[in-house]
Length: 325
Ligand SMILES: Cc1ncc(C[n+]2csc(CCOP(=O)(O)OP(=O)(O)O)c2C)c(N)n1
Ligand SMILES: [Mg+2]
Image 1: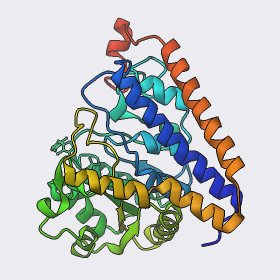
Image 2 (image 1 turned 135 degrees about the horizontal axis):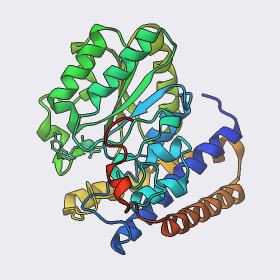
Image 3 (image 1 turned 45 degrees about the vertical axis):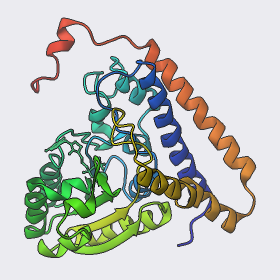
Image 4 (image 1 turned 180 degrees about the vertical axis):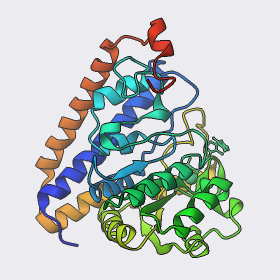
């Protein structure tokens, strides 16, 4: 797929922003400036988010995910300072500081969150797509699904309904090989997860290289057309997470360490894109460097913004947003 240099550089920018933002989050967590038990980083998954979001019309089409949500927020173009303020539980956070890392959301971007219960958001994705069909518009719904989430009831019910009503859902399994510490092979009777599509009358797009932003963009663009015209599509995006399940999970056994090093060395999504850009457009290292520096500055400024924001600590804020006014 031929893409212009500006597009590729922009995808590089987004992926570096996500990577650096999350690296900063890890440091902030270690310093107890981001608190709580959970912080699920997605380093290694960046190409999935950037490629998928590039294939949607931000603010028109819809997107929803589970708790590994920072990358999507940033790929959608949500303000890094407000995302960081949410991570720190501050008033200027995208969810008023009351959601935190797992509950990023933005009505303006049609980003519905950020859910902690594994698979719990999948029926919501079906409902969003039902609304699109009911309204007769040309919008579609992207929903991320962890490989682990494919084994609970929500997955079955949500995908089945989507198949029955031929809803405009794009179901993307982020297959990073593990649900917490349990491998896909140990959790799924059939570990080839995309094959589930057939059971629900959903179009099976097979496995896509989740480390290749162009492959993701290409698959999701085709899926978008199919979803609106004919009904749901399932994509199994193959990826790997560089860190533990969450910040509380730091341990890798020796086997996993070797696996991790191999993914980092040979299949890093940012490096793959860099190699592609070099092949198509020659030596652009100075431009890439400038982009990288600019993202580091954005992350630094996001931390300053979040630090300066107050805590949501008034009685009114405690009771606000509990019910719709
Ligand atoms: C219904 C439910 N069961 C168990 C948990 C605990 N839990 C949180 S994340 C997780 C693993 C999910 O793995 P996967 O869907 O592959 O997503 P990943 O973390 O790899 O992105 C589990 C079991 C939960 N949050 N909700
Ligand atoms: Mg997983």
